[in-house]
Image (spheres, rainbow, N blue to C red):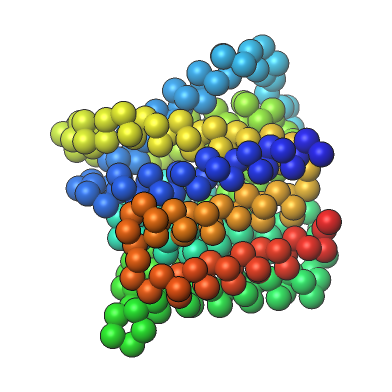
Length: 288
Protein backbone atom coordinates (compact mmCIF):
# COMPACT_ATOMS: atom_id res chain seq x y z
CA UNK A 1 0.00 0.00 0.00
CA UNK A 2 1.95 2.97 -1.32
CA UNK A 3 -0.39 5.53 0.26
CA UNK A 4 0.30 4.10 3.72
CA UNK A 5 4.05 4.51 3.26
CA UNK A 6 3.68 8.16 2.23
CA UNK A 7 1.20 8.90 5.03
CA UNK A 8 3.27 7.33 7.82
CA UNK A 9 6.43 8.98 6.50
CA UNK A 10 4.82 12.39 6.88
CA UNK A 11 4.02 11.82 10.58
CA UNK A 12 7.62 12.38 11.71
CA UNK A 13 7.89 15.62 9.74
CA UNK A 14 4.65 17.07 11.11
CA UNK A 15 5.56 16.10 14.67
CA UNK A 16 8.89 17.93 14.38
CA UNK A 17 7.12 20.85 12.67
CA UNK A 18 4.83 21.74 15.58
CA UNK A 19 7.65 21.36 18.10
CA UNK A 20 10.15 23.54 16.25
CA UNK A 21 7.41 26.02 15.33
CA UNK A 22 6.72 26.61 19.01
CA UNK A 23 10.40 27.24 19.85
CA UNK A 24 10.68 29.82 17.06
CA UNK A 25 7.30 31.49 17.62
CA UNK A 26 7.46 32.06 21.35
CA UNK A 27 9.97 34.95 21.05
CA UNK A 28 8.60 36.35 17.79
CA UNK A 29 7.76 40.08 17.81
CA UNK A 30 6.06 40.06 14.41
CA UNK A 31 4.32 36.70 13.81
CA UNK A 32 2.87 37.70 10.41
CA UNK A 33 6.27 38.90 9.19
CA UNK A 34 7.65 35.57 10.34
CA UNK A 35 4.95 33.85 8.29
CA UNK A 36 5.98 35.76 5.15
CA UNK A 37 9.65 34.83 5.57
CA UNK A 38 8.66 31.23 6.31
CA UNK A 39 6.47 31.03 3.19
CA UNK A 40 9.25 32.51 1.07
CA UNK A 41 11.58 29.70 2.13
CA UNK A 42 8.73 27.24 1.60
CA UNK A 43 8.43 28.32 -2.03
CA UNK A 44 12.15 27.84 -2.58
CA UNK A 45 12.07 24.36 -1.03
CA UNK A 46 9.05 23.34 -3.12
CA UNK A 47 10.84 24.46 -6.29
CA UNK A 48 14.10 22.82 -5.20
CA UNK A 49 12.40 19.47 -4.55
CA UNK A 50 10.63 19.63 -7.90
CA UNK A 51 13.89 20.25 -9.78
CA UNK A 52 15.94 17.81 -7.69
CA UNK A 53 13.49 14.95 -8.32
CA UNK A 54 12.89 15.87 -11.96
CA UNK A 55 9.16 16.19 -11.29
CA UNK A 56 9.10 19.55 -13.07
CA UNK A 57 9.42 17.70 -16.40
CA UNK A 58 5.95 16.19 -15.93
CA UNK A 59 4.17 19.37 -14.86
CA UNK A 60 1.00 20.14 -16.77
CA UNK A 61 -1.82 22.53 -15.94
CA UNK A 62 -5.42 21.26 -15.97
CA UNK A 63 -7.87 22.84 -18.36
CA UNK A 64 -11.02 22.21 -16.32
CA UNK A 65 -12.28 25.42 -14.61
CA UNK A 66 -13.41 23.40 -11.59
CA UNK A 67 -9.80 22.39 -10.91
CA UNK A 68 -8.78 26.03 -10.55
CA UNK A 69 -11.82 26.81 -8.39
CA UNK A 70 -10.83 24.08 -5.93
CA UNK A 71 -7.18 25.14 -6.00
CA UNK A 72 -7.83 28.85 -5.40
CA UNK A 73 -10.28 28.05 -2.61
CA UNK A 74 -7.59 25.93 -0.95
CA UNK A 75 -5.11 28.78 -1.42
CA UNK A 76 -7.43 31.19 0.43
CA UNK A 77 -7.87 28.71 3.28
CA UNK A 78 -4.11 28.13 3.56
CA UNK A 79 -3.52 31.89 3.42
CA UNK A 80 -5.82 32.51 6.38
CA UNK A 81 -4.14 29.67 8.25
CA UNK A 82 -0.64 31.01 7.53
CA UNK A 83 -1.57 34.51 8.74
CA UNK A 84 -2.31 33.14 12.19
CA UNK A 85 -0.24 30.00 12.62
CA UNK A 86 2.80 31.62 14.26
CA UNK A 87 0.64 33.83 16.46
CA UNK A 88 -1.16 30.72 17.71
CA UNK A 89 2.17 28.94 18.29
CA UNK A 90 3.42 31.97 20.21
CA UNK A 91 0.37 32.05 22.48
CA UNK A 92 -0.11 28.30 23.01
CA UNK A 93 2.19 25.53 24.21
CA UNK A 94 3.20 22.98 21.56
CA UNK A 95 1.28 20.23 23.36
CA UNK A 96 -1.86 22.40 23.50
CA UNK A 97 -1.50 23.42 19.85
CA UNK A 98 -1.09 19.80 18.83
CA UNK A 99 -4.27 18.75 20.59
CA UNK A 100 -6.34 21.71 19.37
CA UNK A 101 -5.20 20.97 15.82
CA UNK A 102 -7.36 17.84 15.96
CA UNK A 103 -10.28 20.09 15.10
CA UNK A 104 -8.70 20.34 11.63
CA UNK A 105 -9.30 16.63 11.29
CA UNK A 106 -12.95 17.00 12.30
CA UNK A 107 -13.52 19.76 9.73
CA UNK A 108 -11.69 17.91 6.97
CA UNK A 109 -13.46 14.64 7.71
CA UNK A 110 -16.96 16.11 7.94
CA UNK A 111 -16.30 18.20 4.83
CA UNK A 112 -15.16 15.11 2.95
CA UNK A 113 -18.48 13.42 3.70
CA UNK A 114 -20.19 16.09 1.60
CA UNK A 115 -17.47 16.78 -0.95
CA UNK A 116 -16.71 13.13 -1.69
CA UNK A 117 -20.17 11.75 -0.81
CA UNK A 118 -18.81 9.63 2.02
CA UNK A 119 -21.20 8.00 4.48
CA UNK A 120 -21.72 9.34 8.00
CA UNK A 121 -21.30 6.34 10.32
CA UNK A 122 -21.58 5.76 14.06
CA UNK A 123 -17.79 5.46 14.27
CA UNK A 124 -17.33 8.88 12.71
CA UNK A 125 -19.76 10.46 15.17
CA UNK A 126 -18.00 8.86 18.16
CA UNK A 127 -14.59 9.88 16.83
CA UNK A 128 -15.65 13.49 16.39
CA UNK A 129 -17.10 13.59 19.92
CA UNK A 130 -13.87 12.20 21.42
CA UNK A 131 -11.75 14.80 19.64
CA UNK A 132 -13.98 17.62 20.86
CA UNK A 133 -13.75 16.19 24.41
CA UNK A 134 -9.96 16.26 24.15
CA UNK A 135 -10.18 19.90 23.05
CA UNK A 136 -12.22 20.78 26.15
CA UNK A 137 -9.81 18.91 28.45
CA UNK A 138 -6.73 20.66 27.10
CA UNK A 139 -8.49 24.04 27.13
CA UNK A 140 -9.07 23.69 30.87
CA UNK A 141 -5.67 22.14 31.59
CA UNK A 142 -5.13 24.38 34.61
CA UNK A 143 -8.43 23.54 36.24
CA UNK A 144 -10.45 26.31 37.87
CA UNK A 145 -7.49 28.50 38.77
CA UNK A 146 -5.67 28.53 35.47
CA UNK A 147 -7.14 28.09 32.03
CA UNK A 148 -5.87 28.59 28.51
CA UNK A 149 -6.81 32.23 27.68
CA UNK A 150 -9.99 32.38 25.62
CA UNK A 151 -8.38 34.63 23.00
CA UNK A 152 -5.44 32.26 22.53
CA UNK A 153 -7.76 29.26 22.36
CA UNK A 154 -9.99 31.07 19.86
CA UNK A 155 -7.08 31.84 17.54
CA UNK A 156 -5.96 28.23 17.70
CA UNK A 157 -9.44 26.94 16.89
CA UNK A 158 -10.02 29.41 14.04
CA UNK A 159 -6.79 28.61 12.20
CA UNK A 160 -7.46 24.90 12.75
CA UNK A 161 -10.80 25.32 10.97
CA UNK A 162 -9.10 27.01 8.02
CA UNK A 163 -6.48 24.26 7.92
CA UNK A 164 -9.19 21.59 7.98
CA UNK A 165 -11.00 23.21 5.06
CA UNK A 166 -7.74 23.32 3.11
CA UNK A 167 -7.03 19.67 3.89
CA UNK A 168 -10.51 18.81 2.67
CA UNK A 169 -9.62 20.25 -0.74
CA UNK A 170 -6.12 18.76 -1.01
CA UNK A 171 -7.22 15.47 -2.54
CA UNK A 172 -8.96 17.38 -5.33
CA UNK A 173 -5.76 19.34 -5.88
CA UNK A 174 -3.61 16.20 -5.90
CA UNK A 175 -5.90 14.62 -8.50
CA UNK A 176 -6.42 17.62 -10.78
CA UNK A 177 -2.79 18.73 -10.54
CA UNK A 178 0.29 16.61 -9.90
CA UNK A 179 1.31 16.62 -6.19
CA UNK A 180 4.53 18.49 -7.05
CA UNK A 181 2.77 21.23 -9.03
CA UNK A 182 0.02 21.61 -6.44
CA UNK A 183 2.69 21.75 -3.72
CA UNK A 184 4.39 24.65 -5.48
CA UNK A 185 1.14 26.55 -6.08
CA UNK A 186 -0.14 26.32 -2.49
CA UNK A 187 3.18 27.68 -1.23
CA UNK A 188 3.58 30.38 -3.87
CA UNK A 189 0.11 31.94 -4.07
CA UNK A 190 -0.68 32.31 -0.33
CA UNK A 191 2.41 34.50 0.10
CA UNK A 192 0.60 37.46 -1.46
CA UNK A 193 -2.39 37.09 0.87
CA UNK A 194 -0.22 36.67 3.98
CA UNK A 195 1.71 39.84 3.08
CA UNK A 196 -1.45 41.86 2.29
CA UNK A 197 -1.83 44.76 2.72
CA UNK A 198 1.68 45.61 3.93
CA UNK A 199 4.45 44.57 6.31
CA UNK A 200 7.40 46.78 7.16
CA UNK A 201 10.74 45.70 5.69
CA UNK A 202 12.31 46.17 9.11
CA UNK A 203 9.91 43.58 10.55
CA UNK A 204 10.70 41.11 7.78
CA UNK A 205 14.43 41.62 8.26
CA UNK A 206 14.14 41.21 12.02
CA UNK A 207 12.28 37.90 11.77
CA UNK A 208 14.56 36.59 9.00
CA UNK A 209 17.68 37.30 11.06
CA UNK A 210 16.15 36.06 14.29
CA UNK A 211 14.89 32.83 12.73
CA UNK A 212 18.06 32.32 10.72
CA UNK A 213 18.71 28.69 9.67
CA UNK A 214 16.04 27.39 12.05
CA UNK A 215 13.29 29.10 10.06
CA UNK A 216 14.76 27.63 6.87
CA UNK A 217 14.77 24.18 8.47
CA UNK A 218 11.16 24.66 9.59
CA UNK A 219 10.10 25.47 6.02
CA UNK A 220 11.95 22.43 4.69
CA UNK A 221 10.26 20.15 7.21
CA UNK A 222 6.81 21.55 6.38
CA UNK A 223 7.25 21.36 2.61
CA UNK A 224 8.53 17.78 2.76
CA UNK A 225 5.81 16.57 5.13
CA UNK A 226 3.09 18.24 3.07
CA UNK A 227 4.40 16.79 -0.20
CA UNK A 228 4.41 13.30 1.34
CA UNK A 229 0.80 13.84 2.40
CA UNK A 230 -0.17 14.95 -1.11
CA UNK A 231 1.47 11.86 -2.61
CA UNK A 232 -0.55 9.72 -0.21
CA UNK A 233 -3.76 11.53 -1.20
CA UNK A 234 -2.98 10.93 -4.87
CA UNK A 235 -3.11 7.16 -4.37
CA UNK A 236 -5.27 6.65 -1.27
CA UNK A 237 -8.51 7.56 0.46
CA UNK A 238 -8.61 10.92 2.26
CA UNK A 239 -10.68 9.42 5.09
CA UNK A 240 -7.75 7.12 5.85
CA UNK A 241 -4.82 9.42 5.20
CA UNK A 242 -5.83 12.59 7.07
CA UNK A 243 -6.51 10.77 10.37
CA UNK A 244 -3.29 8.74 10.09
CA UNK A 245 -1.22 11.88 9.55
CA UNK A 246 -2.94 13.51 12.52
CA UNK A 247 -1.57 10.82 14.84
CA UNK A 248 1.50 13.05 14.98
CA UNK A 249 -0.47 14.79 17.77
CA UNK A 250 0.51 12.28 20.42
CA UNK A 251 4.16 12.33 19.37
CA UNK A 252 4.20 16.13 19.54
CA UNK A 253 2.64 16.22 23.01
CA UNK A 254 5.21 13.76 24.33
CA UNK A 255 8.10 15.62 22.66
CA UNK A 256 6.82 18.91 24.10
CA UNK A 257 6.86 17.40 27.57
CA UNK A 258 10.32 15.86 27.14
CA UNK A 259 12.20 18.59 25.25
CA UNK A 260 10.33 21.86 25.87
CA UNK A 261 9.69 21.02 29.54
CA UNK A 262 5.97 21.74 29.17
CA UNK A 263 5.33 19.60 32.24
CA UNK A 264 2.49 21.42 33.91
CA UNK A 265 -0.56 19.12 34.12
CA UNK A 266 1.38 16.44 32.24
CA UNK A 267 -1.14 13.66 32.82
CA UNK A 268 -4.05 15.79 31.67
CA UNK A 269 -2.21 16.57 28.44
CA UNK A 270 -1.29 12.94 27.88
CA UNK A 271 -4.83 11.74 28.61
CA UNK A 272 -6.35 14.39 26.32
CA UNK A 273 -3.96 13.46 23.51
CA UNK A 274 -4.78 9.77 23.94
CA UNK A 275 -8.51 10.56 23.84
CA UNK A 276 -7.94 12.59 20.68
CA UNK A 277 -5.95 9.72 19.23
CA UNK A 278 -8.76 7.30 20.10
CA UNK A 279 -11.11 9.64 18.27
CA UNK A 280 -8.87 9.46 15.22
CA UNK A 281 -9.01 5.67 15.22
CA UNK A 282 -12.79 5.67 15.60
CA UNK A 283 -12.97 7.96 12.59
CA UNK A 284 -10.77 5.74 10.47
CA UNK A 285 -11.62 2.27 11.81
CA UNK A 286 -14.51 1.67 9.45
CA UNK A 287 -12.32 2.31 6.40
CA UNK A 288 -9.78 -0.48 7.08
